[in-house]
Length: 223
Figure (tube, helix red, strand yellow):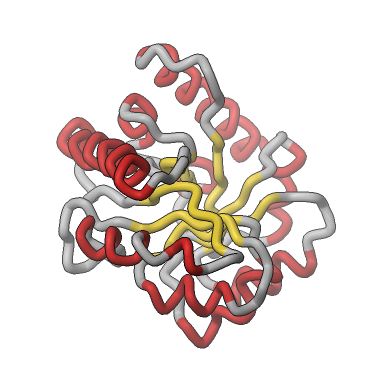
C-alpha cells in the first residue's frame, strides 16, 4: 500500500519538474495509472491516494474491474481495439486513446454516444507496434466530420523502449508537430497528446505531453 502511495507522490513531483523545465505552467499534465493486470484492491489504494484516471489495455479485463469499481473515476481505453469488443467500449470508457483505423471510429459512432477519441500514431514505424502512419492517419481524419458522435481530441503514441529516453525525444516532438499539422490542415482543435510511459514520461512532457500513461512506476512489475 505505502509503495503505491509513495510512487504516485514521486511521479507527481517528476511531472512538476518536467513541466517547470519546459516552461509549461498553463495546464496540468494528466496522470493516468495503467491498471493492466492490477487487482481492484491496488486500484483502490491509488484512488485513495488521489489518482482519478485509469487506463486499461483489454476490454474483457477492464469490464470486470470497471463494473465492480463504485468510486467515480475516468477510464481510458489505451490498448489495441478488436472490432468484436467495440460494443463494450462506449459503456465502459470515457476516452479511447488507441484508434488507428477507420473501421474502429465508424463502429464506435454507431452506438450514438459521444466519445472522446485520440488517434494512435506509429511515429517510429515499428512493425511490432500498433498505430497508423501519419499518412494513414490523415486519411482517417479527413473523413471524421462525417461521424456525429466522435470527438477527436488528440494523438497517442508509444516510443520504442530504450535505456536513454533522450534517444526517443524526436518521437514525441514529431507527434506534437503532427498534431499541429492536423489541426491546421483539417480545421480541428485537438489539444491532447497522450505520450510517455514509466521509462520516458519526463522527456514526453518536455515535448508537450498532456497525458502520461504510467503503470510499472506506480504498481510495480506485472506478472
